[in-house]
Length: 437
Image (cartoon, rainbow, N blue to C red; front, side):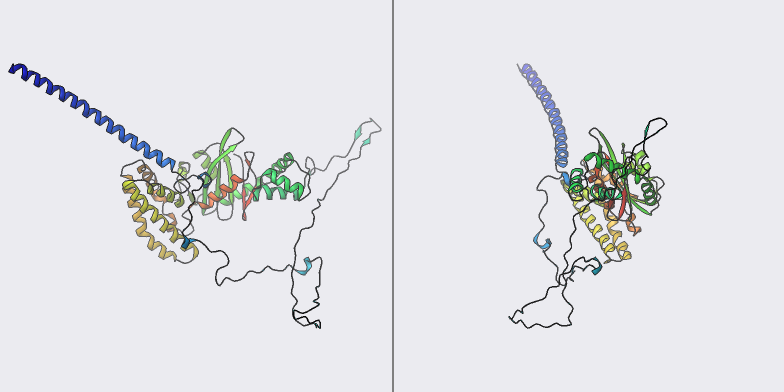
């Protein structure tokens, strides 16, 4: 009985050990699965919380109610500031005045009626108005003649510059200003041309005017391209561009201080970037998009994009969140100090001296984040790949730390979208022209 009892005990122990091993294996599998699910949930939460403040998404994609009201001490009061110099409306020259009304007072405020002239300068008030606009119509009459020899009807052809043209340069200028510079929709522009300028035009006529403008601006476009490529600093950016209802292309922009040029290309890779940049040899300011990696010259990575990346890190948990908070704070300090240089409240040499510890601190935190754990460590590694392009603006005062110049003109061009072909437009005083690749 003792031997049987020991055998039963040994078998029971082995069974328990086998069950224990199975439970341990199952626990390990569940723990691994739990870890994967936590990472997946963290990734989904990060993607769900992406907005224009922590990613490259445009502000128009932000959900309603995202904007947070500023604290009371940061709100601007309405009206002019104390000590503000008044800006009075300047009077137009008398040569432009078409009609005068001389108003003679009849009675004083005290009730007296005995008034005499003085040598004081009279008060003047002007009312400016636009008279009804009447378009100038030029008609070409082509009388028909019959040939006595063959009996055919003949007429004098239209001059070369008049053929297939129904609108003159003034109307074309108005179309360019409305649909290009002012970003007006085609129907609203058409309503203004018909009602305000009294020019009868259809949607097809408006599109025909835009086509004429595109042809006319081909030569200025090439001149603008060469001008931008000769500059010491240029900003580049790209965005999605739908051409028609199906095909999707990309709108590329290259901008400098005085001009910006656009290019619509079906690709977003290095082939399109090479066509945009051409022989540009200055400092290129851009984001971290891989299409610009072909550029072998000096670059500056946009710190506005970096600040959004740091905000994404800031919203993470644990060590990565702490690193993100420090990086985001440092980015705000860096951009604020660079803005002071631009405003003239901080000397350039002082700025460079104060940037040295911030530079080292940012790179140290990025290295710490790249060696850490979590899905966002790859973001730190990708930023560190562009380490040599992070601080160009510290060594060159002419280089801006952000790519806001290109982003602004790209948004402007997107609002000028006309049936998949960008319309010629003016942005401030810069000629911004477009070409389809």
